[in-house]
Length: 276
Picture 1 (tube, helix red, strand yellow):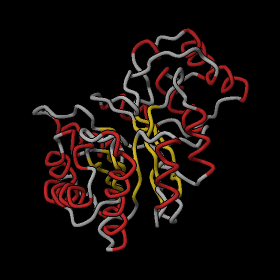
Picture 2 (cartoon, helix red, strand yellow):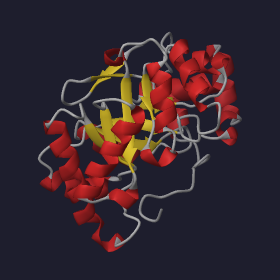
Picture 3 (cartoon, one colour):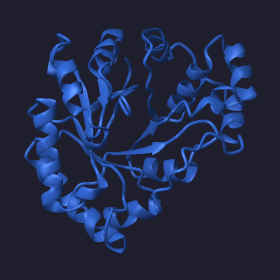
Picture 4 (cartoon, one colour):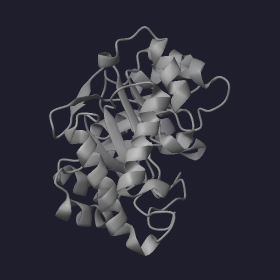
């Protein structure tokens, strides 16, 4: 597994296993399968409702905690100093761990008092800064923050966000948001890196899969990596889990990257950070 290096020097596996909607009675088994397939980077969130299952899976996997990279997120109802501290405490308890490798603020706009989002984001961020200083969190960041959400935070933060998790896939690349983050040494992670069914059936994706001798999903994941974006695919199939890790033996040509970057919009999840 290759890695990226965060701005504080922490190494992060270059592909993670996303656990959104991994919540049924098979959740623990699925996460154990992902670990058996070679994933060492697990991405969850307080809102996902599966932190206990994730914790059980990693405890029973026979893998040293120091060899795992574990991420969770603080939901938008907890964008205050005290609520963020309580959220992280609850996550640590449910995951059964003493520290997190990465903790993110999940969305920039709170559930209530939406016009006060700048103050609320900063208040929650101060809590993450405290926990980072106390070494409860090895890295801190945000999710779904566009540049105009990051700007006021960067202006007042004592510690700059190390990660921003965004929807990113062919047909929805958010190039300005990605370039802004990279200019500020913020590692971009891709949620929904495979887009949706329409993306995987896009004629260009199918053409490139044939050209490179790879699956459509592998083309999407390699596309993210070639943009220095860390993808977080999700799968319930062991075969596809392994396939999604087998993307380090090729790169896309600059011409093919250009074709993917300039696809018309497709596969967007429909949630915009300003209005969600």
